[in-house]
Image (cartoon, rainbow, N blue to C red; front, top):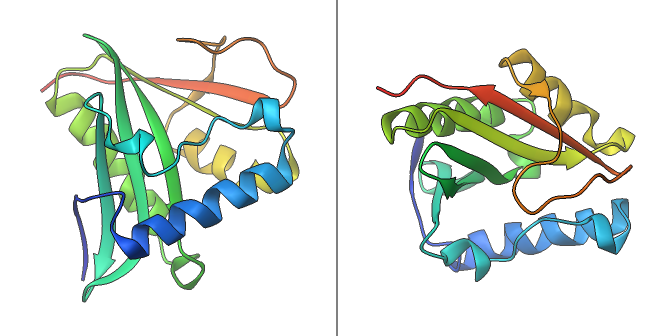
Length: 155
């Protein structure tokens, strides 16, 4: 059974997954268009960070960053290579959106890439009701970025 719980982004297996994530982002997008965070940035007080594990084995991670009282951003969604195709990303996304609603956010936004590498992520978000939107927060218009948002209903 897959269990999603808050975790420490500096934990060794998580740190490795986040390092792989950053390496892939820099290999896929121009440096100025990489907005992925390292493990230290994910420890900031504005972040809530979760991992998905099965029998203690890391399968994926994701984070929610508070932007304002009613707006949050999804950060660092990533699954391990052994977890791909098992629905881990769907479970993590559903968990993050539910937590955003529980915490009283009215809108959840995200940034992802335009390259083919990011097509599965864009499809995942669209399947869950996210739609394209203008840049938000500190982002600016970037041909390498797609911005998406979802209205959530606080619980």
